Length: 175
Image 1 (spheres, rainbow, N blue to C red):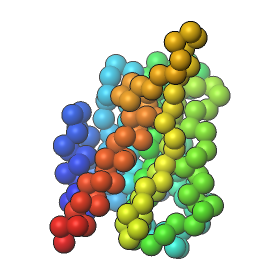
Image 2 (image 1 turned 135 degrees about the vertical axis):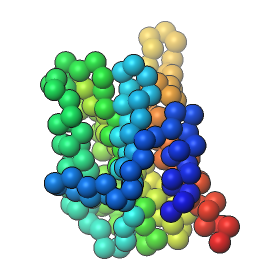
Image 3 (image 1 turned 60 degrees about the vertical axis):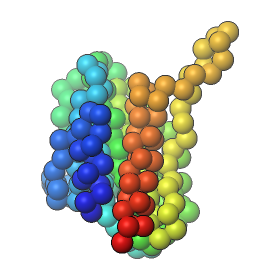
């Protein structure tokens, strides 16, 4: 999909993009990597699938394989890392995903030991639906709640994939 490539390369900090990327445990149609700051690293895996044929166990296994691969690139244990990978799995389908599969997008993206953020997102083309995690807010004592759109990796992923879904939906409207 040209819209995916254009969107990823058109970011303020563009992705290094590879089509049909594969390693031992998984393959993906689009893989992107970018350094967002001294400590931030975004890894995006975009799968074009048939949602009606995907089960939650399959999508979770793919996401876990991607997490394992990204974490293998780091020599330090998660709790000691200064550079934190933000692992983003996106599944795009013409047909609907089942509710159990979509529930993966709401799971906690922040392991207790730190050193990694990971999220799963679903884009359903026919219904033009996006499913993903909620916005992460930070509670500051005496000042209320704050949302950091670009600094917080979970929020950065959320806004990136929402923008991606809009770009894909717009490209469908043009055909």
